[in-house]
Image (cartoon, rainbow over all chains, first blue to last red; front, side, top):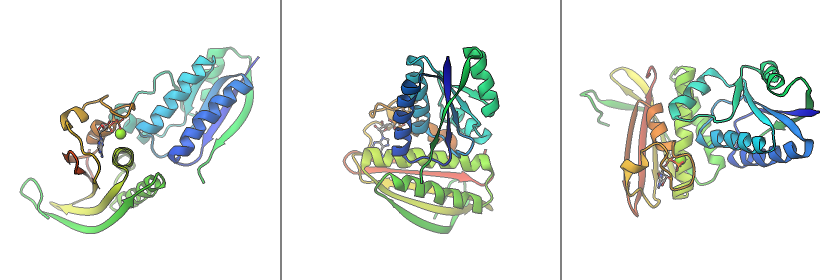
Length: 124
Length: 145
Ligand SMILES: Nc1ncnc2c1ncn2[C@@H]1O[C@H](COP(=O)(O)OP(=O)(O)O)[C@@H](O)[C@H]1O
Ligand SMILES: [Mg+2]
């Protein structure tokens, strides 16, 4: 039986914290055997190419460990800006909110997933 | 200050931030946001400008070890905007045309910072000299598309 991790990013991250998030999360995916990673960025006001790359890395690493990544709650202005910047979140699923993200995970992984842990990316 | 298109440009406020370390990226973003909000820019406009600023300040730190950003509220033809000037004394860019292409990077990253920034602002100009440094100026107008 698989589990999923819910990560809530509460503020715009400093670079080092963003990199920490990447390594911590990948470690947690392997430790908890998570099958899914939900990253809630509804409180994040911008995603630049650095942050976008980190999201892509998390998705790629998670996939290698057999887990799916869903980014939830991206603000419309952030989504439009990302497109104009030229960044595509490859291999990252997106969903409107956490509930929808869970539905997506259940659909993709079967219904045998449960919440495995919460992890808060905080910068201050 | 003189401007393009026949009109002239007036600086309404001016502020300089020194960029020496990673935390300055966050300070700069916050200051840019404040100015954009102050002139009544839309949320989308603010987001585009802050993202552009974030890309340029990262480049400044990464490739030139820091520099100075001048933040100005400007007025031209009765329209206000935020003008940001990123000046560094780093190695400069040998081939600007190449650096402006999507996907070109000497830093093994995505190569979207410069071309992406150009798409996110209304005006973009870049000057660079090898061995001397790089200066990039961008403007987003209050009602810019
Ligand atoms: N301030 C700068 N000083 C020197 N070189 C720069 C500067 N900004 C950008 N560059 C050069 O331009 C290239 C493209 O920059 P950018 O589009 O932001 O992509 P990336 O940062 O992902 O490489 C960089 O790889 C670097 O070689
Ligand atoms: Mg860059």
